[in-house]
Amino acid sequence: LLPLACALPPTRPPPPPPPPLSPPSPPSPPPPSPPPPSPPPPPLSPPPPPSPLSPPFLPPPPPSLPPLLPDMISCDFEVDNCAWIDTAPDGYSWTRMSGGTPSSDTGPSGDHTTGSGSYLYTEASGRSNKLHQLESPLFSLQQAATLSFFYHMHDALRLYMGTLSIEAYNNETGWTTLWSRTGDQGNSWLDAAVILPASATKVRFKGLTGSGFRSDMALDDVSFMQFTPPPPPSAPPLPPLPPPSPPLSPPPPLPPLSPDFVAAASEAELRNLIQDALADVSIYLPPSADFKLGSQISCSSSINVTVASSGEGATLDGQEQSGLFYLEGGCSLTLRGLILVNGRAAQGGVVYASGAGDVEIIDSDVRDCSAYTSGGVVSADQNSGAVSIRGSTVTGCSAGTSGGVVNAYYSGAVSISGSNVSGCSAGSDGGVVRAYNSEPLSIAGVDFTDNKANSGSVLHLSSTPSSISDASFTANIAGDGVTIQTLNSLIDWGCRLGSWMPRKGTFFGNFSVPKCNLCPAGYYGNRSDLTNPTCESSCKRGYFCTLGTAELLFTRRAISRNFGVLGGAGGRWYDGENHIRGGPGVVRWPASCCSARSCSSRRQLPHQMVLTTWASRRASE
Image 1 (cartoon, rainbow, N blue to C red):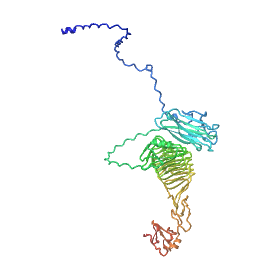
Image 2: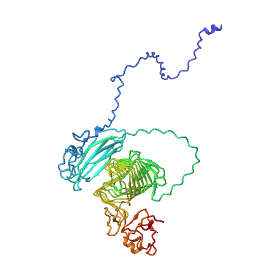
Image 3: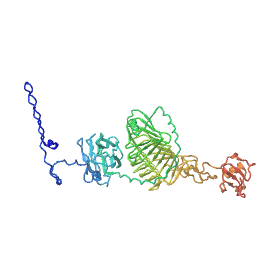
Image 4: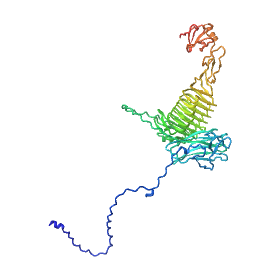
């Protein structure tokens, strides 16, 4: 029965009784019917090969900026302007010229390349205060690069020459001035270079003529070079681990700051304190702090800035890609108790001063700083103030052309004192200092060792007087063998009595001051400013002058009168250095040392000098 019951269809229950009548209600919508089942998808087939005409129609990627090639910007202007674009904002273009410019007392007499080729210049006749602009095409840099060029800005009256400048553009900050010169720069082609930051995408030359026709400024031999980073050094093998050290004692507290100083704990804070300063500011950097600079810290206000540290000193590191400071507008800078390393710039590896105030580097360690053109440590021009290096050590600094340490051009006085300068160099002149038409140079208490240049391994002075005292010049090398080269420049030497040095000319090899050159025998010198081998004058008749003598000495007759006859007419004396002097021999002790009655044939006298007779050649003490 059970299987049968399960097989029978279920019975339907009777319908319920109808409800009472009520007003009709609107009919409800019928329920949606389920969608019909979708057919199974067809089997997958491999996609067709891509076609530029097939969807989707994706736009092509935007073209990247073209790489900067040296040929794009390098130009000698012999044929045309190469890739440079003359934008002529005031309606006046740069003029390509061969030979001299039409106006007298301004402009070059020929191009820089060969003297007979072409160059560009700004024609100033009838174009006072007009802007000439030469702009590069758009480019892309992978790293910083250098743009070098030659320029000529001559105004015989030094009244009307305008301004030549270089600006670089990047997408964030717009145009920024990298280099500028105003006024007469002399009647010769001068070389210069600027560093283009990696963010730069364009560069331009701007020539603004002055107020008269003697404002023909010229441009030639523009060249471009990207930096090649050095290969990373191979890692040395790891030394064995040292034994555990005892727990460190807490560091000593920092010295209290002078009320005039404000502390900077980071490179950004140091930069902001200087660049935002409206009045004099003194900044203290904690010892052992190491600030990495990606660009120069600039100061363009007529204020005094001091950056100082204590103890082992804080480090300012240019990372071989940037100078440390850029000064203009009368700004003066003092750097004290610091370690200044790896500064690299077109001019002034540590400080570039253009129309600035004084620059002082005091009690600091300066190492491995360089400039592509001039002033491996400091470059001062445009009537900047004095440059002073005191109590410091300068090593391994260099310049591509002039002034491996300091280049002063129409600038203030340069002084180096109480310092050591070694291993510095310049590609052309002045391995340590090159000074041109500047205020007097002074050197005192300085050792110059192993410095190099093509001419003037230590100093190259042109129309710059100087004074030198207590200095040594050792193992310095020049292509022409000259240690100090002077051109229309006189030197005041602080020589000892009985020595001399010439005031001008060329100075070769090793020498030192105050030792200088000894006056020769037969002459004497009683002043410290003697400038020729005759010293003060020749010895008078009957007198004898030994090498390097500072005063006239007694004759034999004077000895006989004061001390009695020594050994008869052939009197002799012993000078303490195994030399037997005879004839009109002289001694250097005062007359009161002995009398005729007390002097014997052998007697100890001042300055290790012993009287003796001819018969007794061997003196006893």
